[in-house]
Image (cartoon, rainbow, N blue to C red; front, top):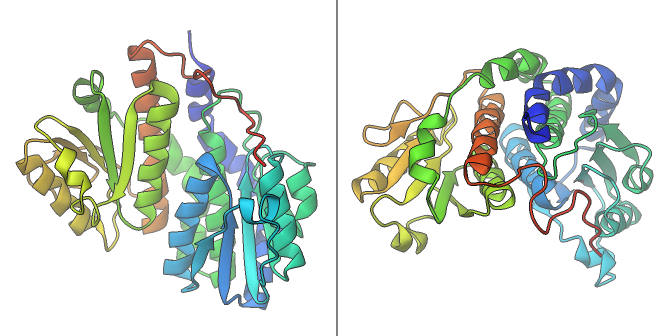
Length: 340
């Protein structure tokens, strides 16, 4: 029987096409608003998979728009009652449900503090949509599996579309417009070589740099959520600062490398860990020792990076079932987390 998670992974290309069509005007409006504001800083507000999408957008905005991006702790508003000074700032809140009280409170607080507030949300109307100045429907459609997949991808795509409009980058605009086509191809990529290394593992590392670090973080969360597999994500530049001590022979590592300036350093670290006896897999042809995972070229480094999430999702859904779990309903988790 096909799981909801598998169906939702397969829906990603259509969900992305729906987003780009349905929310085109609001995506353009958000980009225009950012260009008019010319923010000195961007703040993000999110938790869970949505926070990984925000982390991806942090690197994307810093690389593309040269504007620093910082993550705000939602408890600043909901628990500590802090009113931040956010003049000349933009705040981007990301949520699948739009209902988490702390995300809503922080977004409202950011708006009261003077920030231009944007919400990327899969549920409208919703409290988060009402709290932000501009709410963008990510149009992922109903997501029944507890582990977010298509809503993560669509949140990131919405952010890239806004960024392309903001910076008037025609190459990025074309790459984003072509994502439904590229995502269909990405779903065909076979990462089953990971099975033998990870199926019986107790722990693993996921590595990346830049935007790919956000994909590594999302991957480690999915291992925990769907497989009850301890996984930690690290920058390929930071893994030698302590975490490498746990890398014993046959320790599994997935290194997410994109076709960008960081590819060489990630591939080099993959080879260094392979030389220690680890079972390392990397999405790059520049590694000499680590095993290579197939990847897709999409016409832009940022969309190349995001496309890595699709074959991983397909793999982790299979891994969950192989380990005897139901990826649709992980133990002790619920779809909407009501966090204060």
